[in-house]
Image (cartoon, rainbow, N blue to C red; front, top):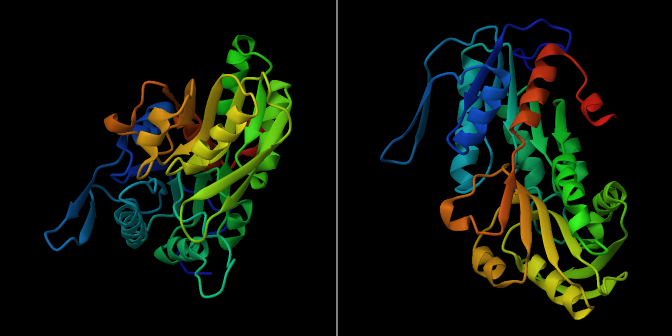
Length: 326
């Protein structure tokens, strides 16, 4: 264990909140919830594309939380995060917790074919090596990624935020059915179905090579004459959503709702989603949504208060699990 680490029983100073440049609006929401100001810093990108951090005040002996999501431009935001951690460590922060609402490369979580990397493990190693003592993130693509970290952390879920919204809309729907875009998301789909007290169905999906494309094959379950809520952890290019909607529509589905934690909306996603018969797309603000991606049927729910409360509990050494009755 490196010298800058301290045990969980150590006493820390006050909360110091810092934010990278990836999601300033979410950082401001978290700061407002905690009634703690965001600390000043300079982040400069030189003409040679090198990134430079400078803190406006000392963080020696303080409990520091660095907020940085890994949205586009992904590589720049990751490097900015790592340099920020190093900057805080070298100023003798007592503890550094990185708050990463969306973690990139989470789909690269296993060696599922010859001669490929496990980039999710590399991301964990980089964050630890830079000097982070804890991490907070939201809805990793695969739960086993938590095991890639040697430092303690909290993987939160947007499930309660998203499912509460659909509970409030349930009376407007006709025979709602939860549909997962693939069998790997079945467990979280069951949680949604239990919360809404409705049945669920699955779409059998097959990934095509090493591309972002997938092929939806058939529906396991009954969606005929039912409103469908498609749930997934993220929407990237929209290919899976498109295939899923085509399959459930061919099996008689009525209105289509789409629900995800992370609105990546990369490549052709916006064009695809705009053309699809989707009544509403419900997501969270783990990633910033630029104006060109803010389709009329997209509703963004905030997780700022959730992240703020978890930061407070981590700082005070209180349970995070009791927030979710765990």
